[in-house]
Length: 495
Ligand SMILES: Cc1ncc(COP(=O)(O)O)c(C=O)c1O
Image (cartoon, rainbow, N blue to C red; front, side, top):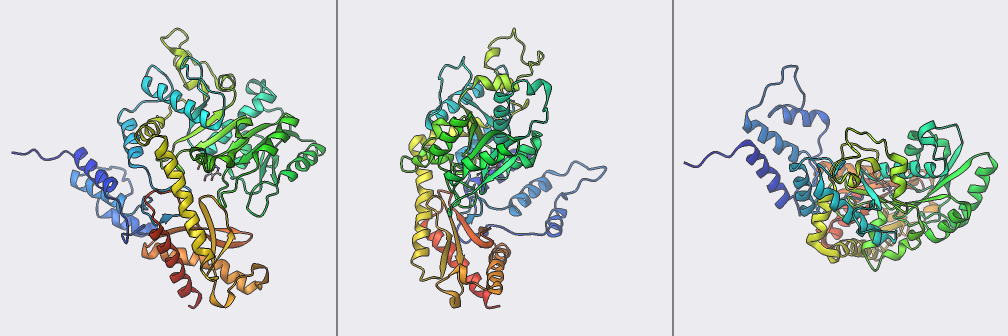
């Protein structure tokens, strides 16, 4: 008689079936539920809450609960999920993540993670080559960076390194009240402010630098911003240049920013969390020209490259600084007399226990090769180009807020009576109605489960932001997304 599958086998089957046959086409992208609806659904299986005397549930119920998790979660691999700058998890990456989890170890020491330590070295080395940073293939030398739990954390570490370079004693002594300044464009990510707060620099230390129409830092604005900050008694510490801003995917001009940093001895950190992946594409990599002069780079492979959250690296020009800045020399973990202790990554970063995020990237990259990585980026840009063409050929039905030329498109739907749109000619009431349109359309999409499209205010007006990250998205899907926006917006405007 055939044995009944175990609970683990049944759970694997649920996940496997989602992974191999994920929602697509007219399947729902989301089954949007308010907290009460979701809680009520789970109450039929094992309940979301924990009682004081939580029992072990019957296996069938646990499997049902796993199904509920899938049912009530957003299908981010669906081609109509263009909500954020991650989407379309690479199934090989998912399995790689699974492999890492199944082997459950920490990337802290070679002793417990020999393969992963070597993989990290190999992947960091390859990424550094793409970035034009100094590299070493000798595993007995520190790799040119570290894996981090996300771009925000990478930026935090980069600013810590920057301060350490200026004031190495800060690690021992602690902050001495020096009023530092960190420069980032007005369109830069909020993690600069959060990092400044956490490092004790204070959010007042973050000086926003003006951007151009597309959202890229104005090179001529940086020097004066630094000068006036110095005049106000602050010590310039670092410039955070963004390669791929979150909303408009603008790339700051690295060569002129690097000139300014070199002239003034400032740390240049490049936030390539999103746009770093342009380096995979021969047609796109020139957006990051000048990167080779930076001191550090954050690069999220969990954004454009479809690795599961999180898979992010901080690359640094001087890897030996990692040890100088972060090491605590705990002799119960990094014993100086153990075999291959020099390979331990744990004292070159802040974390102790650390997920082996490298394995999914390593596996996927080996499976796809460089060509596959390039194709993913080029596909994303081609889809955004397709949408740009559609918008331009829409007879004013759609208008760009910022046209962009990378993987983001920021568009407005324009009511018939306002075509062709002249934003500057809108009166207050038209502006307010137009601003309220995108959230209302999005809510309708969520209710119907037809799509998930992001929206953001640009110059005070909410626009739809379609981001193409997922290789499964076709031009037909992109057209469907525009038709859905058109349909809902038309209904909403006339309601
Ligand atoms: C430009 C930019 N920098 C940094 C981040 C933060 O990265 P993470 O979400 O990995 O912390 C983001 C996230 O969207 C981003 O768009």
